[in-house]
Length: 115
Image (cartoon, rainbow, N blue to C red; front, side, top):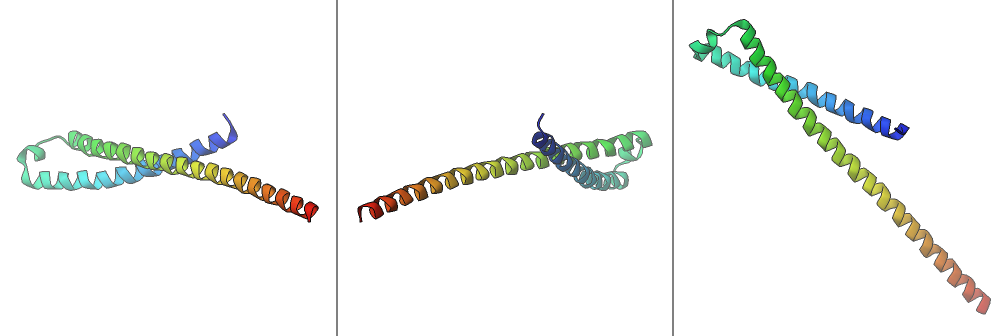
């Protein structure tokens, strides 16, 4: 694995980790709010064991972390691919500019030789 690939993988992993933390916090708040609503409105939810309530809360956090990590990783990959394509297009453009400049110089040299 090349150094560049290792760095790209490391940056992608860090972005996925940030997404997972954000998603777990966001969905944890949502699950906690729903748990509070369930506690006040549902005798069934109130009757659940603490362990099962914690399981429900952690399941929401895990799901949210997974979804957000995947979303951020896909967005990172999209932007990385787009940046690579832009760099490749820029390199092709510079090559074409160089070829055109060489052609213009040759034409000027030919004109000077004739003139």
